[in-house]
Length: 170
Image: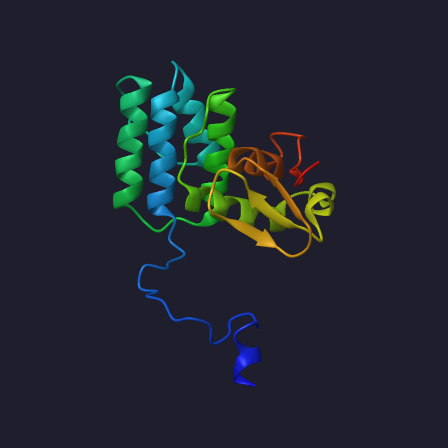
């Protein structure tokens, strides 16, 4: 019986240090704000802040304002993954064709969250598959593998792209 238990969800699998596990997404949200600052053009700070529902300082250039907003997020109240997903969606819009350059764990969290909240047709496109990021160290689901770059998967699941992950070898 103990051998089969390690294959069950939330089972007695290998133990790890879980002290850093939290539902607080402040750090992730601050990273997205910093990335937005690196990509910002005039007027982007207001649009990004409104989409994400964060405060930005009223004066300074957009880059400095978004960097200050990142510092305020880090020092402020806890943030939920829903707000992180909104921030990544806003960053995708801001970035256009430029790369997102976000940490693997952050894109994985957003993809997993978005997979449970996206439209029915997008959930159907990934249902019964293992969704794997080709350029990041994450995957979720069960079944035949479909993959794409992490940013492409996140964009599809957030509804900003119509390009779904594809079968491996297709």
